[in-house]
Structure formats: C-alpha cells, structure tokens
Length: 171
Image (cartoon, rainbow, N blue to C red; front, side):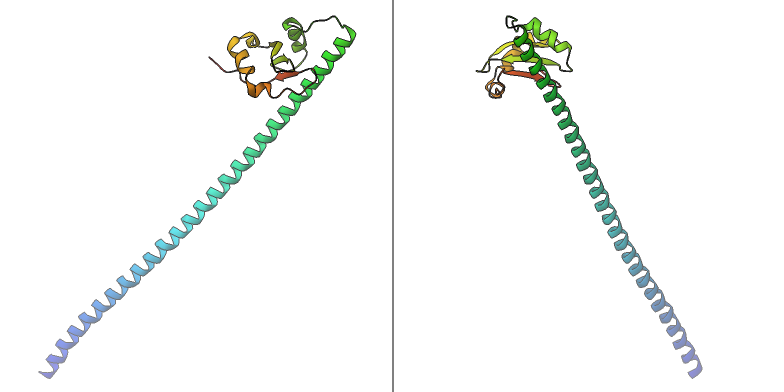
C-alpha cells in the first residue's frame, strides 16, 4: 500500500509539476510579449519623432527657399523701378515739355517687366499710371492704391512706384 500511496503522490506531484511549468511558461511568454510590445512602441515613437523632425526641417528649408525667391523677385522689381525712374528723369531733361500721362506710362511699361506703374504726387495722390491688364484705370483699384497705407510709402523724389506680382483687389 505504501507503494500505491507513493505512486498516487507521484502522480499528483507530476500534475503539479506540469501545472507549475505551464504557468511559468505562460508567465515568461506574457513577459516577453509585454517587453516586445513596449520595445515596438518605443521604436514607433522614435520613428514618428524622426519623421516629424524631418518634415519640420523640409518645411523650414522650403520656407527659406520661398523667402529667398521672393526677395530676389522684389530686388528685380526695385531694379526695374529704379531704371524706369532714371529713364523718366532722363526723358524729362531731354524733353522738358513732355507730360507724364497714362499714355506715356503705357509706353514706359512696354519696355519693362512690370505689371503696372503709378506716378504719385508728394501727398500720395495718383497722378497717372498704366498696367498690363488695364486695371490701373479701375476706380476700385485706384481707391485701394490711394489708401493711407499706400500713400505713406511716398519717398522717391519723382514719386514713382511700380507694381509687379501685386494682385489688385477683385471686386
């Protein structure tokens, strides 16, 4: 009987041993899965941060490129305006009786890559002008150009201003 008891206790002991091994295996498996998920989450966060950093860097570079392009364009406009101002001054010296009017401005406009020309008085009032699309004579555009903001820009001795790439307000 003693042998049977030992045999029975061995069977229980074996069942317990199998159960303990299975529970230990499940515990280890759960730990590995948890660590793997945590590691994957950290890798995904790092990848996301790197992607965000790259996109920010690209946007900054693109903004700088756009600003440089805009600055170059404005410099070309200013150079054209200075050349035009010099040409008008030279024409005024050679032909003192020549009147600056819309027709004369249209002639000047043909020689330059400008979309519009306005000649202002010292007070900022529009004396004459021309534009490639004919909007220089539009009353709505003239009212916008006669605003205090625009007229506060008067500083040139001849009060000559040019507009290129400037979008006239639509009605």
